[in-house]
Image (cartoon, rainbow, N blue to C red; front, top):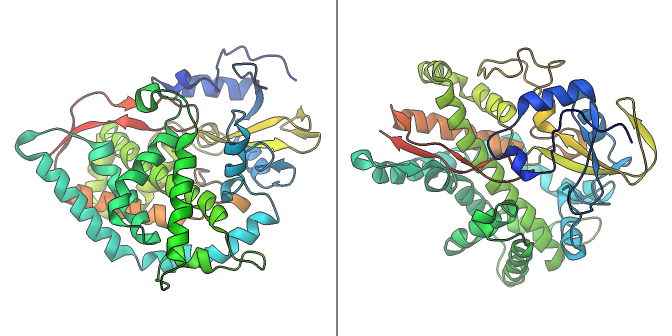
Length: 406
């Protein structure tokens, strides 16, 4: 392993990101050591932080050499039951299993298919914003995270999968508990029970759906799909469900709330967007680059190799830092500037290669519709207090954003 960093940056510590992302320190560490060793607390093994755009792409394009399955995709060493559940999710599958499970679903997430949901997503977005307007009547304050942004992905995923509407709030709560496990203000203490609870719900839901006539939704597609010559078991559906619902909720909620904060912090960009709504799609891409929802995903080296000039041993943890790659000056001019007209914009917030986000078209559609409707509905949006970040070394998100919508 290399000599320890002189920057003092501790990427594994959730407190590192509590006051905001330390971009200057990340820049310094990237310049000092593009593939940098980082220690872990509590006697867990450390990891290599991959900080350049090129090296993150290299790791992503070598899924056999850098395994998502062996140790999972988070830095922490998980309990065996949690790790085994993670291995049932697409994001933690290696070839050839990953393609076996991804291929039957790919058609349902193609751009043309997702585009057919536009009217439905626009209608529910308008409904959510109308409710927010009612809460903001007479100058009232709303929490943009939970009163507005959270409702969009919850409702979209609920309808996409045919989930009972009375269960949507429960599933959103479970998803939030999973992504907030390092924040004692949200979950009280670190535990991994939320993923188990959601999986158990999904197993029961699958068993019930198998007794019913097929419907035109994603659940039927999964339960009836051909996954390597066999159908998916209820237990496998449980793991699959946890990823679909949690990822669909968390990353989209973060994109919307972080996106609003980015625009409010750059009023000239917000004014340009209001003047020309055709720029919304480009603005969504810049939001995803500038305020990426996830800091990293982990891999585990399966054999000795060299990455970015650094020797990596078999069994070492390797973390692809999108937060660093998305502001790599070797790829992005003026990388810390927020520019809704930036083009090209090869950010890595959706990943790349084999694990490129299956829901990319859905996320982009949700983002475009949301900001079109938000700016049309509210000529004035005022931040009324300091946003509160989630305590996490993985999720770059907020747990409270107080605003007034006029």
